[in-house]
Length: 181
Length: 259
Image (cartoon, rainbow over all chains, first blue to last red; front, side, top):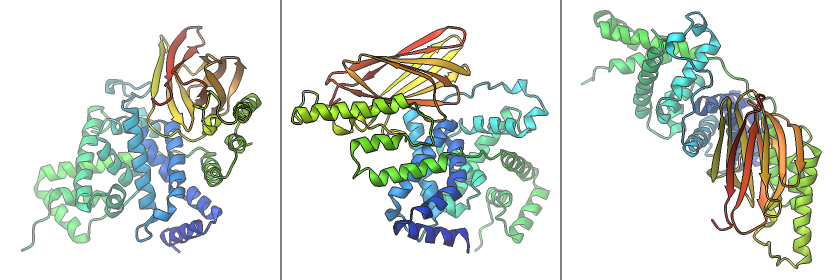
């Protein structure tokens, strides 16, 4: 049984009042949702609170879920909306603590996972939010173009062009920081 | 008539792993004869490889249990009494000081007692039943106040949000690694409802009339829940003290009822 089929059954069980079925869904998707939200809003505390809020909203709105669509596309859509609303509320950009100029980069250290993560996150926070969303869905949640289209609510063609622009924007920022050649 | 494919689409399909064998062959041939396509393909592959190296972050261990507690609370909240709601906010798995628990319950009990004694028409009826009920979840709505506590080597932040009939001050420490916070208010105007460590437990919490003090780490967030006793706006003072003894101060204003 695929996760997709399994998800649909679990949602049905939740609607029937089975709380344990919802816990299975939470356990299955807490990692992807937390990571996606973290990449969108940057702060771990915010990502944690938002992830919790997302799952609570999902639970409260299960009756509104249309089973013709994949459960995770719907879940990610709620996660994206919550994250974007949070960013609008915060209304400001916070630089990373301990961030360094590109000239200070240690060539070996720059390739380590933690350094890559720091530079990518910094660059992600500087690009347009709608560009950040498609990059996160594609590269961190491994969504197909179709999944992204459903999660974001735009046609697949728009996803492709937005993803292209987002990649260009991110690439240029990372090149300017010396992280990409 | 067949339209020739856009090299941008082909490059994206290639790096995303969605290209068909025919598309891959078309792109290969294109890249061979056009250096700009070759360069773009190289750059995009480099970006995709870099993003693939970004490590996944493990979600906090208590995230799923926290969600399930919130789910159970949301199911019960319509039927629960105010006291039960308060008790549900501080489950056994989270480190919370007994004094906060008792203060929250006491605040609710006092309010309900006053209300009952006065037949429900108390002068303080601007405090609804839900006033003593805070939330472990992010309070809904936009922040209605924000204060930066800044001094050399010190940076803390406090945001005020409404949560039901109460107000939640979300306090975070940006630097240094740890600091001491003090939240002061006039107890005639403002009622202390509770305090909870959102990210971790709490340390060195002290409560006295009109002041709550606690230690905080920079990766921690603390929620202090207050409720207004009066219809007019009230002021809450915040103080952050770092290890060097330097202090930073800020204020927040709990708005007048109806604002």
